[in-house]
Length: 138
Image 1 (tube, rainbow, N blue to C red):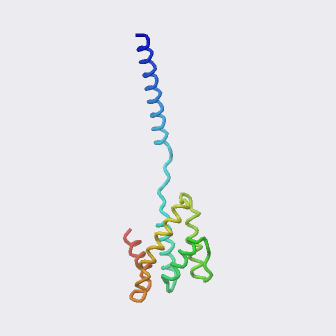
Image 2 (cartoon, rainbow, N blue to C red; image 1 turned 180 degrees about the horizontal axis):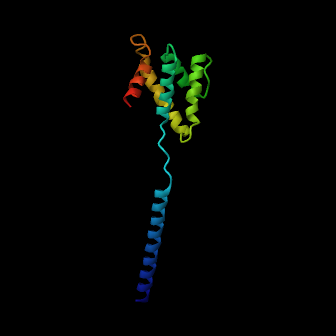
Image 3 (cartoon, rainbow, N blue to C red; image 1 turned 180 degrees about the vertical axis):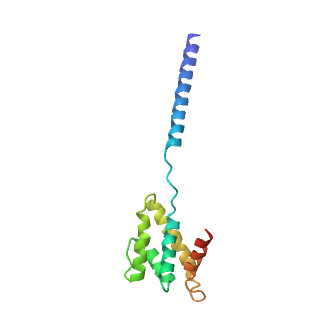
């Protein structure tokens, strides 16, 4: 009988410790300040849309060159693409934007630009028009 009582005491003590640990972990996660969700894709699209509104004749070629240069970690040689690439690279330095999320956003946007490249003869600047429609609907 003595062994059984001792076992019960140890099990109850273990349960109390486990409950205290779970309560401490639960309260710690509730009190931790939550980071605002930052979407690098949205930030890059904002930069591209500001380029569209500022530039007299925006083009998909410049936007795609800037995106690809940022993905390579390079700066384009021509001026409109270089200026746009510098603006896009500012997104990587924003607080809350991880390098992985930034690269993923660049990859997604480059893939979208590539899908719209086939329509260049029919509808030039289809990628920027596509982004402006998406940005307008959000």
